[in-house]
Structure formats: C-alpha cells, structure tokens
Length: 279
Image 1: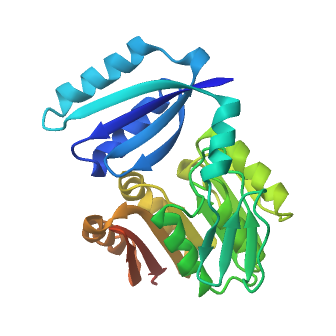
Image 2 (image 1 turned 90 degrees about the horizontal axis):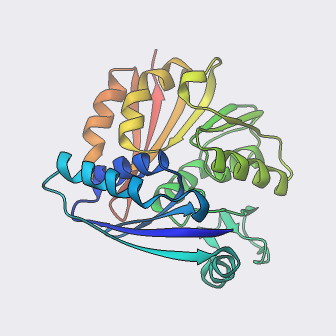
C-alpha cells in the first residue's frame, strides 16, 4: 500500500498545527509527524482526494488570513518507507530509567525498564518532548496497587510503563483507530495487561488514582472537568502536549476543578505538569 506524504509549513505553528491536523483527519489523513515549522501528514493513496485537501486549506486560509500556509506532496511506497524508517529510527533513553526501542534495537542493561514499541506512525515514541517528560514524571510516581488511565495513549508506551511499574490496573484509550490498534499490538509485545479501548473522555465511568493526558491544549481545556471528576481525592493528574505559554490558562482551568499544581517541567519549549486533586 502506498501513502501520500503531505509536508505542510505554517508561519505560526502553535495552536494552528492542532487545528489543521484535526481537519486533515476528517479527509483521510491518519498519522502526523511534527517538524519545526509545521508537520508531515500521511494518507493512504487510494483514499487521498486533492480537491478535499484544496477545499480544506482554502477554508483555513480564509478563516486565518494572518497565517501563511504552504505544502508539498509526494507519494511514498510503503516498503521503501518502512526501510527508511528503520534506518533513521533511533531508540530513546530517558535517563537510566526507561529505554524505548523498536524490535530491531537490542535491549540494554543498567536501565530499569526496556519497552519495545512499533510506532506505526502513532504518537508516543518518546522522541517528542511531551512523551519524554511524562516518562520523567512517572519515574517518581508510586504506582503499586494504583488504578491508572492513559487518555490519548498513542503507541501505549506510557500505559505499558505504568503497568511495568506495578499499577494494579491500567486503561489506555485513544479516539484514533490507527493508534488504538497500534497500542493493542505494543501491549502484547511487552506482555503486560492493559485494557486498550477506542474512545475519549466522554466514555469515562470509573475513577482513577493516576490520570495521564498527553494530548493538546484545546482538548485538555475541554475535558479538564471530566478528568477531575474521574480522579480520586489525592490522585495525580499528569498533563502534557502543549507549550510553555499555555501553562497559565491550563493551571487556571485545573484550579477551577480542584486540581493543585505541584510540578512543572519544560523541554524545548514543551511543558509537562503534575497536579494533585484536593478535597
């Protein structure tokens, strides 16, 4: 199966990148890779429609006249893509705590956790600062006997790590079918018991001791009240997927939902926050 690779550049990346990625999902694009001034988007060739893309981008330009958008398109053969991906894909070591690798990387010694991931172009390989920072926060998070939710799980790497650290139960949800299937595969690869589900915060029905949401600012703001509702008193909420300048508005929203900020870390202008739910 061949893919269409859309390389899209924006004069203002921040929020607009998330908006465009969401719109592109509606016309068949199923995975994304960030770059400094925009992102790459991938769509199966057989379902790609140039007219749909032109209509989407023209509508975006009309609604956001201050943002310059340019793009380039090329076709990728899946076999060649996989070969190039394996050549360039590097394993990620988070301190001496966690090593995230593909099947063609051997595990390493003197690290607490080796996790094997086949990303399939899903988000969550620890190459991105947001996933990396959540892993750093999880190092000091006591998980023995805890119930955990990983919302927007992507590859499932964070959920897998939580189970390896001793969590009693781990739920891993994503509203993207590609990510859902990928997370299930990675859970099996690592021989852990994680309940992977296709869904979002609207489907929550139970409470957790630890709630992880590595998504984007708009979704986090939209669903903050739901996260808090399903987090036990004294429980921990880990958030990432946003920039340093988004912290103030996210903290304000969290405070309105009985969540108290206790940890704030940053990497390459991306931020991760740790909240505790108050009485």
